[in-house]
Length: 370
Image 1 (tube, rainbow, N blue to C red):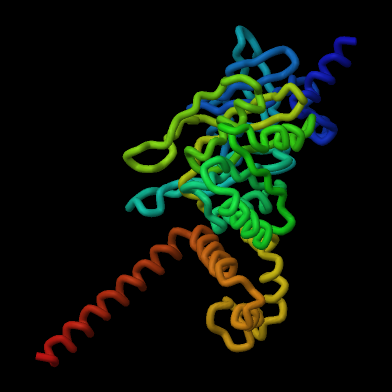
Image 2 (image 1 turned 180 degrees about the horizontal axis):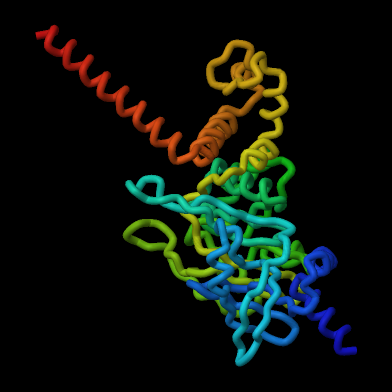
């Protein structure tokens, strides 16, 4: 009876046959399993049928880790041992079904090092939240969708704060979304007027895992509070000095809804850096990917080559100009991140030589003019 109760409770946390079979394959039956529900600096909060624990990764595991993906993330199922006084040690991470990751770092700040950041794991669906007033951007949606597609996660759209614009303006935005993302679910919401909130509650299914993504101030935490039917997550207003959302949510955390759905709140992201997600981009822009197979050259960049089917479709008006432009930009960004440090330095040196040569030529012509 006890085992049956534990199984049901673990199932409520998202545990299923996929994780159990992998636990057996890795011969980890002697360890308890728990789900990572929050991540802090140097520690994690994990939860299982017995309760919640503050957990840490032992020094040896940290030493053996070769990348960020070797560390736990919110959504992971882990094996734990040495459980006592509400504390535990994480022994290993069970294989992940899905993963959301991005490159973090301010590309506009000199010397800022880009780092791989795991947003969440074992997620079924990602809600990309944008507000209609200051945050609405079709290209940003595509950035999030690329990350989701690459990680095996279904993306959906929540267009929030619809009370701030007229019905006519809202209809225009909805048409734009349907034209650009015709196969994607779109939910229109407002926590002020309660529009769409019941639809969102009904959309979230028992036993499924959802992650809320978006910039600061778009209302992610307020939406989750509404789903929880209580103000658990602290929320903030838009900063009057910067006209941007304040970073109220400072850590990732998982919440369990009364209907059995599981949701993750995330800190706002001002930059959605592309990691090595070429597959995700190709899947998202499948129309362009299909055209590319008919290009004259195998290594066509779709920017200037003769016999390029992508450019031909663009010129004829069949291919959306903004969609094409965003595709090219995302491809270039991925290519940049995939370059080795040596290649980046070499490219920077070549660009530096080009600048110096251009300056010398400019000075020569300047002196001749006088």
